[in-house]
Amino acid sequence: MMEIAYQPRIDSEIESLVERINPPSVCVDNDSDPNCTLVKVDSANKYGILLDMVQVLADLDLVISKSYISSDGDWFMDVFHVTDQLGNKLTDRSLILYIQQAICYSRKGGITKEMQSNLKREVQQRHVSTEHTAFEITGIDRPGLLSEISAVLSDIGCHVTAAVAWTHHERAAMVIYLEDGFNGGPIIDPIRKAQVKDHLDIVMEAHQRVGDESRVVVSVVEAKGAPVGWAHTERRLHELMYAEGDYENCFGCDCCSGDRCDALSRGRCERIHVAIEACNGYSMVSVKCRDRPKLLFDTVCALKELQFVVFHAVAGARGSTAEQEYFIRKKNGCTLETEGQRERLRHCLVAAISRRASRGFKLDVRTKNKMGLLSDVTRTVRENGLSITRAEMSTQGENAVGSFYVAGVSGGEKDANAVEAVVRELRGVVVSAVKTVGMVSTRLGSSSDVEEENRAKSSIGRLLWSKLERLSTSIRR
Image 1 (tube, rainbow, N blue to C red):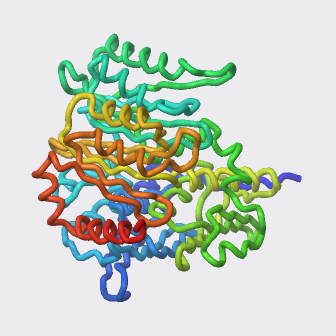
Image 2: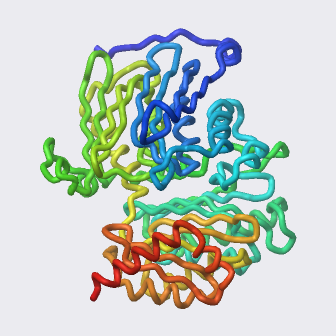
């Protein structure tokens, strides 16, 4: 007989009253641990609060080395052990203040521009503003797809101000932010907007097989500045990939099916281990895989997408292996009763983790912002026999910065000569080429942009690149 879980109906006004009476308390502690900063959060519990907290830290590119989560009942308590990308504690007062404010206000309509302006660094764009129009694109992936899309947008006079593209298991999902290149500002005219959508539809349908479907959706911006169906960009990409069904074929190729894996215990297994079992009224989910940035965000995002509530969780890493353990139930209070339900969750978690995993080379690009820049970069990559597996580009004032993950069109790793050719052809662009599996392969910069080079030389990153380049050269000899 099917178990039916009953939950009391909670009035939204009462729920918001509880939040107002007991607003989130965020303590940033630099004294308790000698190696990292502790971000402690106490708050009235609410569905989705864990993902909101993790999202704030992920957007700042902070490294979460450990996390302890408890939200069983009306109260949420969490402790995040975090450092910056170089492994240092958080000492910047503006950053600490931003974390405290952002976590508190993430439940109240989002982070304000004033909060971001007080922070002395860029924060990843969270949603569409009134200055841009967003297009969501999903469909079957193929080599050169992003190049074709960006070329069409350039031809019809659209300026790409930001773009994020993911590919996984022959599926592609993109969120592209545009300005009207002729007039500037968002594309408001319905006729113009329909014209752009029609051109994108043609590109997506150009090489479709029988039965394939693609989708181009325009995110409409309201007068108040919040888009209809507002969503964080990377959360939205997870949703789009899930809707495309990219999780259906990932079990077996991305996941290690063995219960015990000696290679994983030695830190050498590249696959993902997911185990699910019943435990004291919960479904206990254990995840083990290679550690990487934003791993916690991706797994929590998948659980939220599937309508699961995390009651208790522990996440950390042993060497290069990340270990996460979640005690969950469905939003309606039920646990996973059948093997089919458990297998579907395993598939979705493996897909969410592997979407961001990239092999091959990462090209970091920084140059002056201009019309058609994305088209120029992606065309050069395609003409040198490389395919873009993941991309992210945005504008920072007068500059444009981006990261492009590239590999051979056949799916294997391409020789470094092709990457070096891309760097040479992108004149006036400062490019770093990094091998994303194994050690750093090479770092090449354009000498034509003297100002950018001089600025780079004074940074810690430049010093690290110099040492790694000498090491790479000595190994090749």
